[in-house]
Amino acid sequence: AQTVTQSQPEMSVQEAETVTLSCTYDTSENNYYLFWYKQPPSRQMILVIRQEAYKQQNATENRFSVNFQKAAKSFSLKISDSQLGDTAMYFCAFRRSGNTGKLIFGQGTTLQVKP
Amino acid sequence: SAVISQKPSRDICQRGTSLTIQCQVDSQVTMMFWYRQQPGQSLTLIATANQGSEATYESGFVIDKFPISRPNLTFSTLTVSNMSPEDSSIYLCSQVWNNEQFFGPGTRLTVL
Image (cartoon, rainbow over all chains, first blue to last red):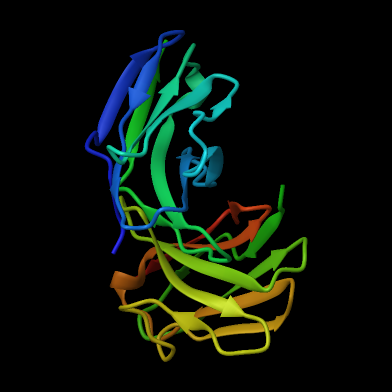
């Protein structure tokens, strides 16, 4: 069975600084997807970034980038130039490849961006 | 990206009653998914709603408690039956589109 672990329940960062959220996972699969979702107080789940396991290149979306270490089963999220609107709960998630919508989520990390 | 709407957005219910949550997606998809997020917790998949067949439930969730309908490719309902305070959660509908997974805004359910 797959598991996803986020070991940082809460983090804070000053506005404009950089912060890294950690995520590790366990799976015997070779092909899969990894995601970071953001959930602000509005509770809407927003996809931040996606990584396909077969791609060696780390995904990047504007200020968000990941450090994907497949052998170590690590998938951290780096937020550069943090903004107040980045304040939210962040979830790391795993999904097997194929036509499935079953995401395995980590416990979440609450990020507070301070002015 | 996919657009998903849910109704109601929130509700307060008495124990022993049932609530049906509706989910509408803007594109035709074979499978829709229902997740639960208990207070302060992460999301857990309840079931996969398949068009034209019965829903597939995850371990720990049963049809009698969470009956699901899927009358067409853009609509699904989840019923939370015989509610107890432990059912107080956010219930989210989801779909996969272009290998990305999108979520509805959620239904916040409080059971008294």
